[in-house]
Image (cartoon, rainbow, N blue to C red; front, top):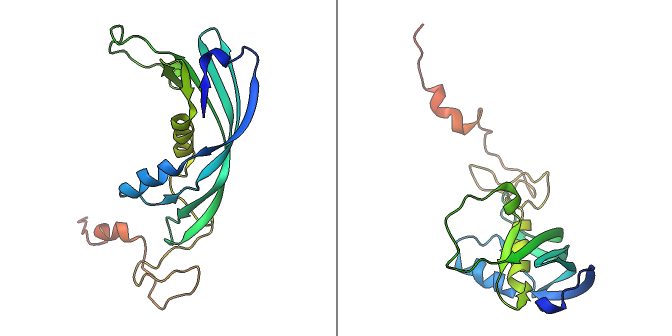
Length: 178
């Protein structure tokens, strides 16, 4: 969806629309990270307004996404219902741009330089930011057996339980003289 800058009012305006995010499937399929699958579109509720030349956007993104569990490697569906907000300010001319330090207040800012705001890349960015860092099908997911690979959510295995944390095994071999 595109919004003309001249049509952005000073009083908040609310709209609801479906935004295509199929492009995210193409991006994720070309990378080594295939943990997520996106629907053809997500529902967006958006409120926007201006204060002088600064443009303010906030709203909510909703939809059902596919993910691969980080513990048991099973596909599952999860509901995204994520609030977002961002601010667009006029971009400095290329000649004016210099290397400068970002301040904490600048982190939520993005720039615009056209007469029209294309919301598609901004919405896609908000979707990516809302994705879980480690997708889990359930909080109590037991994952896979480290020895035989059995999905412990569906069945138990006969492997001997490891003694202690395997990452600490090297320390068990150390001999400390006293």
